[in-house]
Image 1: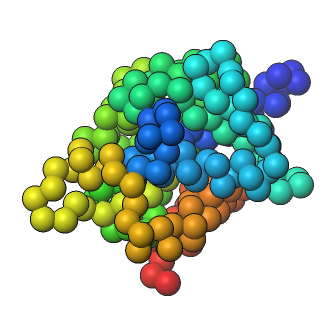
Image 2 (image 1 turned 120 degrees about the vertical axis):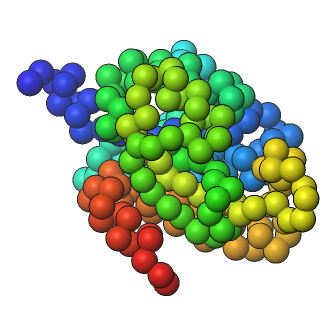
Image 3 (image 1 turned 120 degrees about the horizontal axis):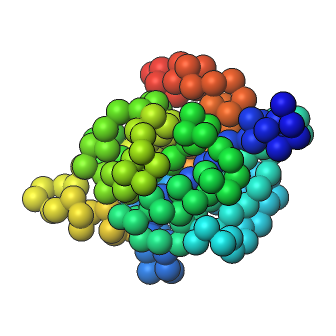
Length: 200
């Protein structure tokens, strides 16, 4: 195995989904990118513009941990697939080492669920990634944002900022999301599921 192959085998691509621009930065739909900001802070890794139409930061999970390529597509959520496919090609990372962090309406706020593969569940960012890379078989860190109250449309709900009450808890949720990504990379999906799916 050559040096390039060894390097690509030792690293993970972690993609945080969201929409570009300051007006979307605090939206529930952007919670995946918020988790990536937490991971980049931990690694002291600044995001830089990358030719894959993404912002990329590279770092490790701890001193000896696996190398993470943290990426935030510059495209809108529904067009996430192109940048993700380009990142996988550029870094030579296979789908089994792709982790996508995204918001999830079907999970209560302040809750995480992790899985490998499956459908897109109506999430247009996942839908576009699956279409672009040709497989659904990648790991998802699903960050619960809960269901909208009353009859508020889901599309409006996810494009609004977290409530003031939610924002008091949000730092803990983002830290948990970052912990989950790091644990998947270090110890594998099953170990991370056992930790984060167990009742507190």
